Image (cartoon, rainbow, N blue to C red; front, side, top):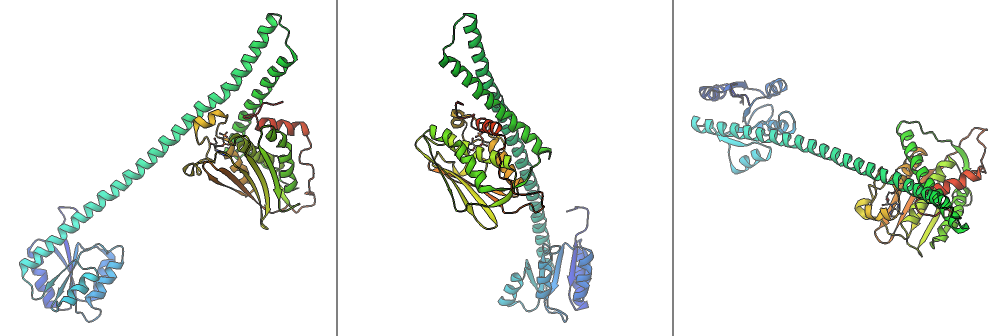
Length: 422
Ligand code: ADP
């Protein structure tokens, strides 16, 4: 409140004599007054200016003081102005009614000047304190929002920092392994040692698997960059989604079963033609399947199920693996996020896979959700809308992996975190 400004009191009373008496007392004590003998004058004035306090008569011809008070309290602009009733009929129920409609006090007519001024002064002071408190509260809230933002930036920087540390580990580990295998081969050659078939196979395997691992990471990084710059385009064609998913599952069945994990494929529908990008679906499925293997112990189970939901097709990838803690469920689709560093270190991974899966599903106008119980297992469910490309040149594609070699290579790439490639 501006300390040099004279505080303004609006006095409302239908008796001009009363108005004058009250105004004289108020002005004598250093306040400015505005007088209203009719209710319409009150609202006219209020629409332009805001008084610091209102002294309000109860009985008036147009509208009684309680009604006026109610209207003022319901308006955001005027709800905080303290209102004191000036009344001749201050029975208990009148006083209670006054407080109920939002008044801060009441004064009986005829009034004593000293009492009137003390009450006015008190409520003006209270109002000032209230305003100060609200202001500090607003400032506190602003600071709080800024702090939350700063904290989010710190968190994001921390995640990025972790990602780069992780990324360099991810890139260096396979590279070091490739390097040391080559060094070993060189030293064997130098010493004219002849490699046994078994040794040569082992070296070749290591070189291949680690190259695939690097390729996977590089592919993921390139795709993320493409997605961020809006450069990633889907090649939509009409396919039988059931056979795509079934073929992908079958193609990794050996890998999975060699790992002593049981794999079940089940579907409630034999054929459903929808427009998808077959490579993207392959990428999504291989990613989810490789995660299912990574986080599932030997002897456990992975179930792939397809449900026809009419408007959409649901594909579920369920495992009986380690599961995901409830508080981590919402972050696993975020880029660079891994649930447990120590745990994921036993397997490899950079925390990009699921963020790419989510982006690819959403590019199909679909959605991905996860249900998981820590220690029991996880289920990832993808829902893809059932829509087809209508044009003639969009006939149904039957062969979604015309280039078999590159298909096998993608499996090897996506599973490179887990498997020795044979
Ligand atoms: P990563 O390359 O680390 O596997 P993802 O983005 O594919 O990255 O997965 C992110 C994290 O989500 C994983 O590190 C793991 O902690 C958790 N996660 C994903 N799938 C599963 C699953 N089937 N079971 C348990 N945890 C999982």
